[in-house]
Length: 284
Image (cartoon, rainbow, N blue to C red):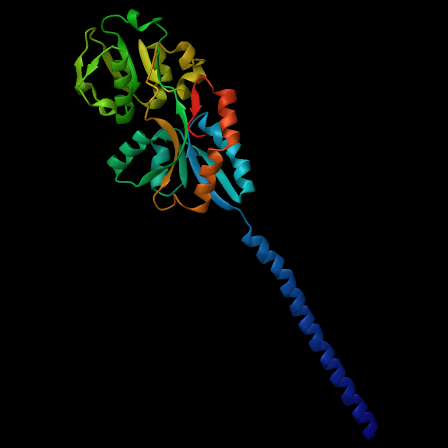
């Protein structure tokens, strides 16, 4: 009887030990299963949003998107409908960067809104020009001709400076790209100046006698500055199209990776192959 009791006790101990080992094995297996999941989670790409408007900005971001994914950054391209929304979205932290503007325009937005947008990477120089469907040279512009330009302060100054460089008007000394119509000192042919929203410039080509615009708006009309512009701005322009972020995120890993890719060889080749007559890379 005692022997059978001892045998039963020993069997119980062995079973209990086996259960304990199974429990430990189960826990170990669970931990082993969880470890790859944790690793996978840690390698998920960082998500960013970049606001933009029209080609070639949208085209460039399309080129950069898969390259960035290789760097662990998943970029969402947000195409907006006017030239105010991208800066407002960036200032309000609805997007992480934008790509559509030059630094003088960004500075004017900061001054008017009290925001802290900053340039991150210059990308290309868009050749600014004056186009016309009504005359073939600026000498043919009639008395009282209508000269059209974008209505934001930076592009007003840019346009007036280009008109002055072409001898159409004279401006106060030293005003440069900060010029307004009030700074016109001589207008011998009594030109009329109309300021319109940036996105309306292309439509004004039928109405105005000379329309000042970047190639981004001229190109969809089949116009290029080298072939079709009656006048162009000087080569030392301050209006490079630039990737812009905020002070609080400009040095983040994702934004710096974007800056590197947007000034990489793939983008340079794209500009040289497709936009050589209208956009010059602003990086080496």
